[in-house]
Structure formats: structure tokens, C-alpha cells
Length: 296
Image 1 (tube, rainbow, N blue to C red):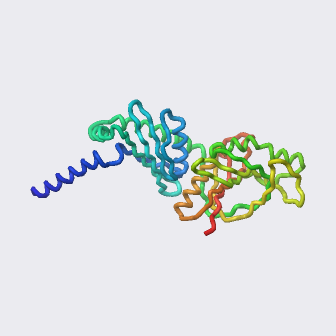
Image 2: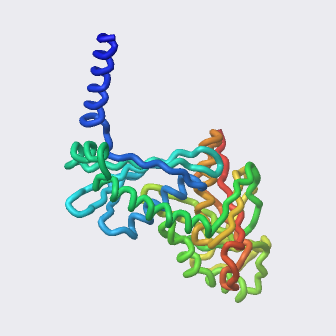
Image 3: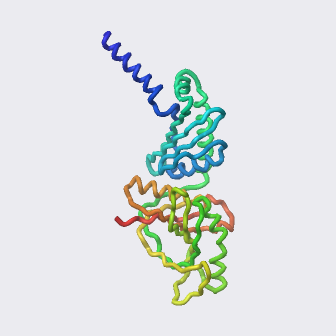
């Protein structure tokens, strides 16, 4: 009996020492969200821009680290996103105050500490914003499909990923105006073909295209070029919502591909079925989004 109590005492002491001096974070929060890790990843970055005193420390594909200034405390928020299935992501947040770590760990054991109060308030704020955002769109991953073949008149645009629609709006009349002036009839829905997606810089190059009938001779104009989009195997999703956030379908597709060990190229293509200039409920606007399957 005495030996058992001694062993238990030693184990308790080791646990206390680990908790106070080795445990790498002061406070821990976890929650689930019905969306892809990429959407949450993007949401955390955008949320950080709207909050005073938050700066980004590091960015990974499924992890983010932020520094938050709260009074005399400098807190580190270490976010981790783990995909559970097609529609659920588990989010883990490890919070640390490097200069007051020992005090925080002791305070958490007996009362609500300052770090706990700040963490709960900030993460609650993020979750409320995320919930409202998720109500504005829907994404359904359809599975393996094929990018439809098309011959198009296009213009090349470079923007930050979140500013894709601004780039489209600024150039929306360029190609249609050229086609109208030359009496060329569109033949299909407008589309965006991303040719380069720099995830670290969060920039994209894309072709904004309008399908037309292919002819032997076609008029030329500065900045406008013709391109044949070949049919190819791709992972497909259907997106409903404001086209400015259609990249949420990109995140859903890359997450699906990763979980199913399916190699894809970071070159999404979107086909738009509604004209935002005509108004209506953005939640009913439809786009088909494709992520090309990479050849093994």
C-alpha cells in the first residue's frame, strides 16, 4: 500500500512538473465547423485583419500562428485545422503568453485566468463570424468529372485571390465589348481559368474567358487572345453563392483530394451560370468549379 502511494505521488509530481514547465501552451480550445479546413484557414486570416492588435506570425497549409496584443499581455494563438470528412473540420487553438506562462497555468487550475477570458472572447467572436459567413454559400463536391472543351476569347488578369471578382469587374466589358463590336456571338457561359495560384503570397493569375465559335480568321485586339480549353479529367464541385467567395469551392476540392489521395493541380476553373449584374439572391447563383487531376 505504501509503495503504491509512493508511486502515485511520484506520478502526480511528474504530471505537475510537466504541466507547469513542459506543456507547450497555457490554454486550449477546440471546436468543430461544418466546412473545409481551407475555408477556416482563410477565415482566420481575414478575421485577423479586422481585429486590432493581431499580427500573423506564420502560415502553413493546415496551421496558422497569430500574435495578439491584449493590454500588457502578448498572446500567441496557434490554430490547427483537421479535416474529419467532406463537411466537418475540427479546429484546435493553443494559446500561450510566453512572458506569463507559469502564472497562467497556475491560475487556470483555480479560477478563470486573464488568458482564458481573452481566448474565450476572441474565439467566440471568430466562431460567430464564421457561422454567418457559412450561411451565405453552399459547396457540394460532385466527384470525378471532366472539364468541358471550349474555344474562348480571353483576357489575362493578376490579383490577390480574395480580389478575384474586382479584377473580373474591372475587365468585364473588355472581351464582351470586343465581341459585340466585331459581331461575334458568345457560345456558352463565361469562365475563369486560373493558371498560377501562389498560396504563400495569396496571388493568382487567371484568364477571364468567353466561349465563342472557332473560325479560321478572327479579329485581333491588344490584351485579348484566343485559347482552346481541352477536355480533361478533373475533380468537380458545384458552388452556390456570391462569386466573390467561389474560391471556397477550391478549398473544398483540395481538401477532398488530399483526404482521398487524389493528385490535383492548383489550377481551378470556374464556369458561371448567372450574371450578378442582373441582381437576385446571391445564394442562388451557381458556378461549376473544376480542379484538374494531375497525371501520375
